Image (tube, rainbow, N blue to C red; front, top):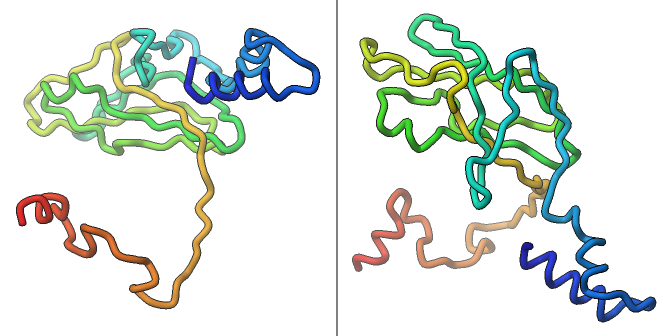
Length: 180
């Protein structure tokens, strides 16, 4: 159970006009740690899954492979409809650091308005290396999160942004401060 759900359950059980038990409050909040996503799978596609209970991301699996002018296009056969204010991030698997493949659009974003197939595209760094994934194999990871809307608050001058330790020291600015 998440810390947020635990704190809210305690607050509800204590502050409720109609007293409820902690267990009843937890049941009331069951949906806070989950997000229901509609999914449609093409024939032969595999449902994304967590490899381990503690994993942050689910694995996506290869349904079909298409080779196209140096690109490897992995079809997952997975289509989703995300709830309002959610986005899905598609990330490379860490195992690809042992290969000669680069995920072209990493991380990729699936917006709530997209319901097409989730497709992963790799490019080989060495054109002679074999491709890494086989049909049925893990090709990427997905993560879902609540999306916040950005609302800009323009200020009149750079100084109005306030001061920070790193300031405008650019790339590697954390190391520049730590080595002074």
